[in-house]
Image (cartoon, rainbow, N blue to C red; front, side, top):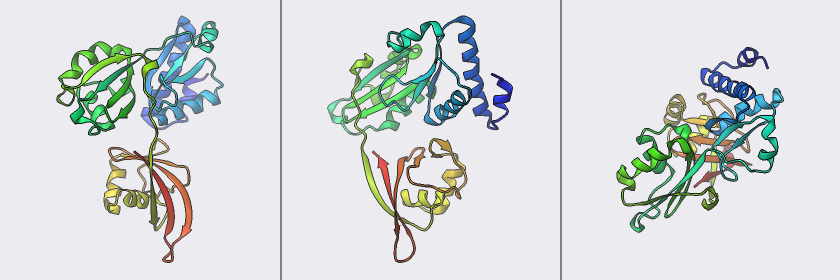
Length: 267
């Protein structure tokens, strides 16, 4: 593989850095005959690397998040000599899980951002944290094993968790999270990104444009800053700090010419 040629096809510095890291891990694996990994990646980052893996026909590499249908995943690179062990699932990867059991008076009061915000407040980098599965009575949080000691020592110092029972559990004990969606029936003047954001959040176009400028809008996990971007059925819209939405069916127009559209909000 020609590293410089591959990197020359990308303009964003953060994309180049991530791609370079993957190529370096591949080279390191080949040199040392060892398993290497890149810390937890979001879906945009996974899609970016997956394109290169496919284009370059890279072997002995895969994404792994610890649980079925994980959203955040590690990139694992392994030497050919370990292929059979990988296929037979006989190797352990550096993912651990912490369960936070809330006191009864706090049931149903914490959401994803409450857990993630607490971990970030401790100084833990986002890439060290995998999926956070939230339930009424608490959460199961996947993380990299290299922060286990720090996490166990410090998380109880957070006021929001100081009355909670916190334990490390095995990956097999993680509860399965049911995906819930709320259907929104909207009427919008166009399929522009800024129009949809304003309608979904029940806010003004001006506020929608501010969210775009602040880099808080993602379409199919890629950051979007232009309000003119057109949306289509099946797109995934993420508004950082506000929620995640799936664009559903377009259902014709209203009498005054607005587009009728179904949007499914993840809850």
